[in-house]
Amino acid sequence: MNGRYRSVSRTCASTRALRYAVSMNIDFVDLSGKLLIAMPGMGDPRFEKSVIFMCAHSADGSMGLIINKPASDLRLKDLLKQLDISPGDQSGGMPVHFGGPVEHGRGFVLHSGEYMIPNSTLRVDDRFGMTATLDILQAMAEGGGPERRILALGYAGWGSGQLEEEIQRNGWLTCEALPDIVFSTDDEGKWVAALASLGIDPIMLSPQAGRA
Image (cartoon, rainbow, N blue to C red):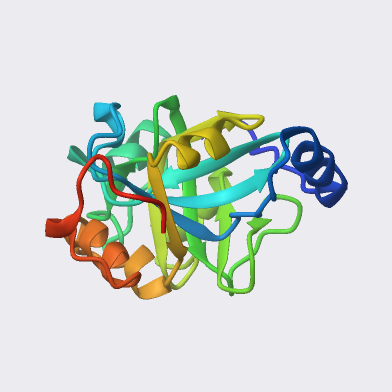
């Protein structure tokens, strides 16, 4: 978590989205605050059965965090020691997730919406925020910080139009980001739970399944 996360600005995003939609002859849908669910057979093993929380989405590009792939050998206390922050007793054992293949040495905390650091927190909506400064790690080490949170290293990113193309190719389904799914400690169950929120049984899915 070196430096301050530069929030993905959504200033004039609606105008940019309109231009993109007109040029591609499609309707742009802002997926900020939604979940992406990886479809079987999408072709990228890094995202197999991934559930991604979309932190920001505009016609210029997208950024999200994988929320269901914890690192097997890394905990918050390990990261705190690397940053010379004394780990507290309450949150030191918190897992660190693989947030995505981009800048995998950079840390992000996806958290509940009641917590905010001015000029540092990206407020996704009333339920979710994302902060990537040392301040939040210090607060967590001291037993404070947001009520609900996920710590991730790296993120998933898409350029202009890339995510829309992947969705059209049936690489992803989208659904509402329910906090009980996002912040669940059952990482292995999040993919099934996200599909279930759409009324989909994963047994019925195939690589050729359509878009929800």
